[in-house]
Length: 538
Image 1 (cartoon, rainbow, N blue to C red):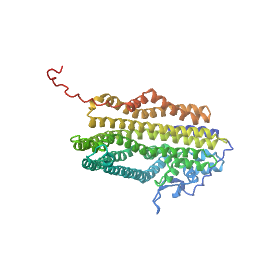
Image 2 (image 1 turned 90 degrees about the vertical axis):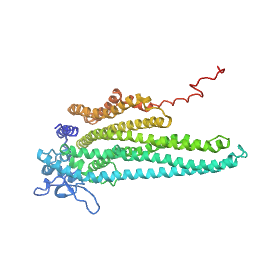
Image 3 (image 1 turned 120 degrees about the vertical axis):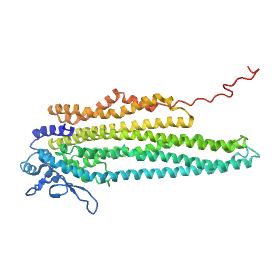
Image 4 (image 1 turned 180 degrees about the horizontal axis):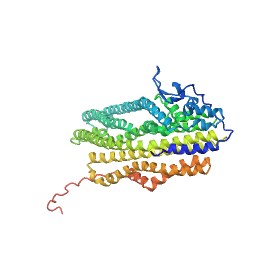
């Protein structure tokens, strides 16, 4: 099996670091001495849920693996204890290479723990996200209900219009009452269509929710690559699993960085990076709010012509326009029905996009998290080996890795949002104004191709780039330059992604989708068009 990026880079850096570890760089975190007998044989064990419902992992003989000392003991076993006694470098005590048998045993135990923790944690996070979505939907419904009650103000229209239409008081009162009822009804009907659309986005959007997907992809990486993560598992993976309860608002990568920070309390750069990712995660959490705002704007744009006709109804009726009431009622019902059909069509597009994006976002996030994990491991080696370690290069390395992860995720989210928004405009033009969908054949053909290409391109790039940058990482390590090792790989990943996405026309495809506008409806035929003119009128 091909060695993963994390394993390849860690193994290269570890071999090099052990050869360069100075005598002054002694063990920063003292590992606990191994227990007698075969205590270190059990590396990872599931911990049964206690009274407080907490789950976690355990070190030797079931001791909680929350501390770094237990993690080091679990990783090194007897070798760690002996190495510490002989003054071995800190990096060696933290990352001890395992035998194939030990690796397989550790991987099996780690997978068991990941499987046990994953279901409970993801369920709690998904419930939190759904709860927030429900709260926002309730707030939208409450606001729009208040807006609909504004229609009752139309009952006072006769007081404003009586001077313009003297002697039409009875007509004004009659049609003002009808207008008030129709306004309240129209807003509530449009609200129902809006809530249907947003509810569908909330349910299906969980497949591409960035906060949930980062956690899911992290679990996928831990489970699928358990043998390759054996060396770093006790130091990075186990404490993270302990901290992942689903109750905290802390993102998974922030929890991982906080655990690394505990190993070097005097080197605060890991906390800085963790805070950065927490803010980035907060921005991801704003995406549903942004989508709600866009939905509200589209709602207002779709409902405004109908509501304007309703507001003008009393004046039209008083001016003697025949059948004004019937036309407004028919217009309101027709527009609401057209909006409902457009919404159902958009939900169909949303379903297809969600399935496609859900598959591809998983394929791109797991390798991106693996890259971050690789450079987090190398950064930890760096601060353990080098006396005067530079916080800049650790900061640059980890920040660039996180920005690369966010860029891949952002492409998926922006692509689906652009295509969905344009599709909704086209369906509204079809069902409200009668513009045939075939008139937008260019969008459905090239727009769909642009969506698929923009979603597939990050996956293809990261699969190829991992191989290429892993080869270059070996060359960088051979130069003996820590700054090059820490900064070169993340910079290549990030800059390469931007160049490839632009050169492969991914950005141009997104621009086409965003800028595409539905053609205006054909103008109504002039009166008498197509009829033979009366004699003598030529």
